[in-house]
Amino acid sequence: MNNLFVYTLRLADNSLVLAQRLSEWTGHGPFLEEDLALTNVALDTFGTATSLLEYAAQVEGKGRSADDLAYFRHEREYTNVLLVEQPNGDYAKTIIRQAFVDHFNLLLYTELAKSKDETIAGIAQKAIKEVTYHVRHSSSWVLRFGDGTEESHNRAQEAVNELWRFTGELFEMDEVENNLVKEGISVNTSLLKEKWEKQITDLLTKATLKKPESSFMQSGGRKGMHTEHLGYLLSEMQTVPRMYPNAKW
Image (cartoon, rainbow, N blue to C red; front, side, top):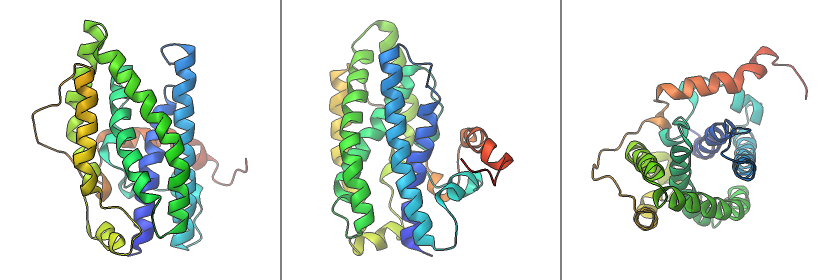
């Protein structure tokens, strides 16, 4: 097993699937300025995914391109965490999902910027600048929803309750990542959990929202065991490349 390929592909899949989800809001945002803001977040996330997919293809060394990895794998071959594939729902749910991911990504990329792998470190350094903005954006909306009207508060709380069970997977470690940690390439995400939970708990408290008491966590995405939602997302994302596999853009 090529640990570096597997790890880079995991990072890429998280960004790719989340970006595809966010792009579904393009043209449907609550007002023009926010429509553009979320579209820019999606574009940033697509950019990170592209850089990671290109590196993954290079590391694999089997002649596959970034596009091959993005468009010509099956559902069970994707290794993203379950959180990023969850449907957008209403805008509160999208924002709560984004806040969970943004705070994690800022912690993750800050550590990855120190990686001994120069390519991963470079991608992380660029991502930090973008994710710093993403954190401000999603956090401000969490506060706006949570401490807003009764309707916005209830919708935000429902989103927290529904999505919380998918957050534990962000901090899971396995042999692939443990080996790369020893080589100074990847990050021990389990060590980020306490800081992430504090940041999210503080944010929810300011927004008058409550963290669920349940400790049950759902996982399996990194092993290719996904929710039913990913298949529909991939069907839409991959339709044109699969219809015209030799097309040049």
